[in-house]
Image 1 (tube, rainbow, N blue to C red):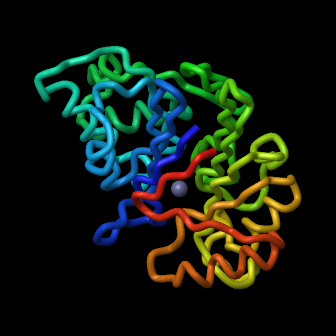
Image 2 (image 1 turned 45 degrees about the horizontal axis):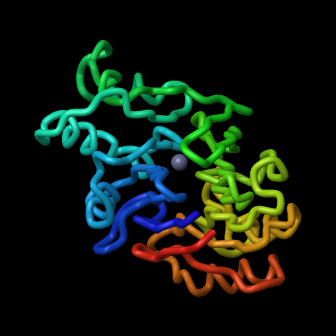
Length: 249
Ligand SMILES: [Zn+2]
């Protein structure tokens, strides 16, 4: 598989740094994983969006889903309409977006085929098998474990606090893309439903993730310090997700 980072900012975009979004590709299959602010424009510099095989949205927080509306408008009104695009979402997300569009019966679902996934849900997208697990976050949030038919595994934490089925999500993952919103002591976190960089490293080490990449770092923090803190607990070098980066999984 190949993962391209479209955006990795936590919470809000800054110039050149969209929020969460990734393009996951395996052979002919392309999956857009999280559609945070600014990621649709970034995606279009890489592929023709009309060719996407599926989208996966982890949760309804705007920094993970809001560009789904821009994508919808581009598909619907961009001159090349397509219907039934597989869009894997947690419970409640489709309803929230329809509400934003001002109509609980909005035909958004004709273009985006919403396939609601709960804890333990699975999906098969081209040569990629995807498993979903609910995370420690105040709205239904899906962590993702994507396994290619060559056996390689990408795990994505989405947004989460430390509680969760970490072994199911990230055990022995070839790449564990993990949120690390905060730095410093876990006890001092402003909000318990995110991780510190140290916690990300601790979790990755506990479940035997082969490599760890930090993402969703609070924009005011120095990401190099996040990497140092995660390396301290992981015990090995740690990568940092930056927009435009391409990683072979
Ligand atoms: Zn969130």
